[in-house]
Length: 354
Ligand SMILES: *Cc1c(COP(=O)(O)O)cnc(C)c1O
Image (tube, rainbow, N blue to C red; front, side, top):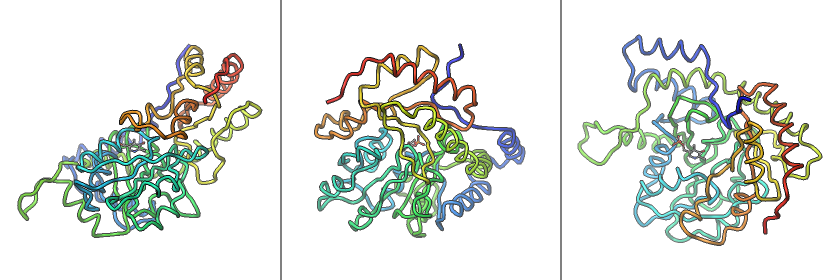
């Protein structure tokens, strides 16, 4: 029995050709291909300005610095997210302030976020978790810079706008298994030319203006060559993910679980099911059947920081499960996943989560 991995990149011949071609030119570091990738990516996301970097974490770090977030500043983030955000906030010397999530969408709860605003709040980071667009309206009205974290939502749409088009500044990740990939990589986009200029100034240490602390966060032309091909394929990747999500919705209907929200702009970076009971047993049972499922967030941030009082995050962490979804998942693999899930679900003794 071959185990189905939880995630897998989708890379083809075209990526290989373009990477090989770029290497053959001898221009391999940040150059012409990076410029072209920045321009096309910004156009496709409906923004004017962009700066490519070497990871999503670097993208958040530079976005914070460009907004003037430094020591003494507080940055609001949801607790239910990976530690990349925590790292980036610490890199900027700022203090993370955690907010709880909405129990249905898993995205930041705008009401709870607003309660956590103080005189020191300098930014709010809003991930569009699992590819479902977060509701930005209330947060944008607070008058505090909003950083859209689109690491999981490239191409997702809400009210005819792509995620990343509304925030003060927005970031993307091109890690191997994200919506599209350059191996590692990231992008910062904004409507504000000044912010992006500031980020470009910080991402490389060589600068004739004199010394200040800068970074080496550049993307290579080799990566950008791959990114340009992946960007062209993004719509087809999303279509495939939506087809699989439809299959899961059909295949798992009738089970007493909550399936992901059927939002037309959802890109299903993850297919996260709210089980209503602790998920570890079901994850183990699926593993025995050759299916790799996981808790969608390894551990919420409030647990790393020893904080309590995030009831919706706690519940989501304990009772949700992420099953494989990616463009290269074959039809027989999908059938196996649905079958195994239904079997394991029936076998599983239900332990309610308080
Ligand atoms: C992956 C991810 C990041 C970090 O991106 P890297 O490229 O791995 O540094 C940040 N935020 C979210 C929501 C992510 O999923």
